[in-house]
View 1: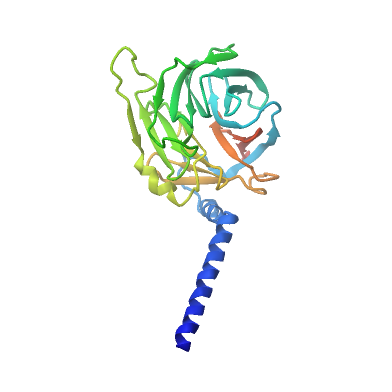
View 2: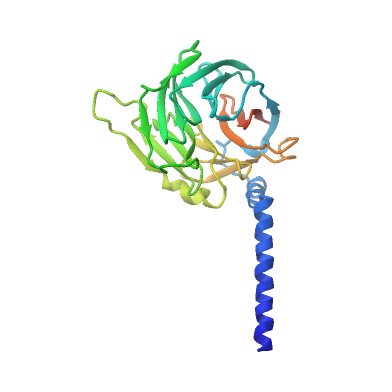
Length: 304
């Protein structure tokens, strides 16, 4: 009896210690740090990658006045500017590459904008998380207000309610599809083909599918998916995780190629990036981050 009691106490202590260790790992995001260290000390040998470990912050947490709840980010290479959305004020904001506001566009007919991506010309897709909708909109160069009530829409059957649905959207010009990330519970990446170039006078032929190639790659390495951006020249994805404070680069087969930590002291950051919600890539491979409520970051490769 004494032996059994002693064994039980030992077992309880072991469980308690394991619980404390797991709690510390979760609280201090040590899992993300471990993955970052792995990619830093064992970088990809492939030439055609971002080499994220070589990036340094150039604009570090610039507060953009007038912005609240900024979420999502896209780069328009034709205008060489950035676009973000405000998910409570129902606005689209155009910024220059230094984070200065160029214009504000009021948007009627949306509820909870979370993402935006530039397709071509003046065409964009914006996502409404609460209603599970993608909307194809035309945004003229001087426009300061739009009504999307009659814009082409696609409702994605993810969750009927809630705000843990799709967080980010990016246009993949190589494969003529939209890439959409679901935040978590569970997190995954979807492709949407046929929506952008649909002929509305004909029966729709839209293909929506989960990209299972990435399921295993992101299951244990990123706690959530806050945003995504597709880089046409490399064919790679940059996935952003707010909860892990991490950016990871993946090829189209789901292979991880590098990581950039959004932690204080890493890549020159003076403080943690508090709530990263949007990511975009410029033509020179500069990486732009938007963090709620209104903080703007730019990372560039270190000069060789």
